[in-house]
Image (cartoon, rainbow, N blue to C red):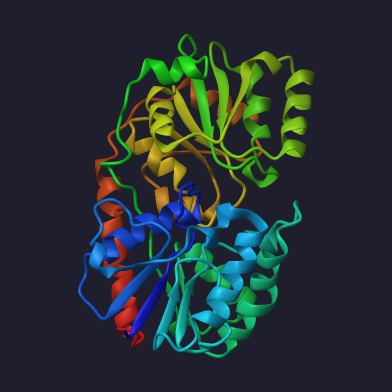
Length: 356
């Protein structure tokens, strides 16, 4: 087998990298070529003949020991099995040098040091990846913004880096009305602003909190992994502004529940200060929600002409735009961002680099 594609982040609780990996390998598996995909799970609708299943205990959701086992498996046990190796995450292999590629979804780990990232994440970003990139490893990034960041930080040659926009699956993310899910979260009688994602400072959730006193008739719902320190900061600010009872944390929600939350929200707001791509706005739009995003370079690159932009430091601007928000037709946006297009673009890069 010429090429092994590692998708160990696609597990039974995928987030971010795991979700994008799942959609990407599903579409890649439908293409011809001398490659196989190594993944703990096989996405529904994929060509199963292209897969070699790996143990689920290697997945990130298995915590510290899963990360350690995965490190030794990818760095040493895979040695010599393939001529080329490609990883759908930031995790590379020490033993393939120039005969490998990886996806660097963003460099936020290097730009924002608000949290203590896991040691292995820091190790890959700060030590191993700079080493293998100097030896000619190829890089795929999800936006031209990230391409510029990677070239600046790692001094990667332009011929060794390719841009592949991510997509949205309209069969998965579609409008779903379900009162039972709303009742589960006590949202059945509530009109709400929705945010989906990890609760980190760079996500700029406080912008919505500061805008909330100027917005009438709407509460604020947060769905995603909660970091307690940031949660307490948000609640403290909400208390000071008199809107504590209008802020609701749901924690991690399933994909089926997420579609319902997107479908019922008054508006989806994604006020992040920095992203590599940002999939939740696309998912929300695919479920029929109006979308507001922060006015930052990566979103201008991806979503100009489609979503409403807001200053990431101006709560009054956000309040005004929420009050005036209207539902839009995003058909052209979905033609631009599809996982089929993503897979074909990646496939072309792999062929140009000689991996296929």
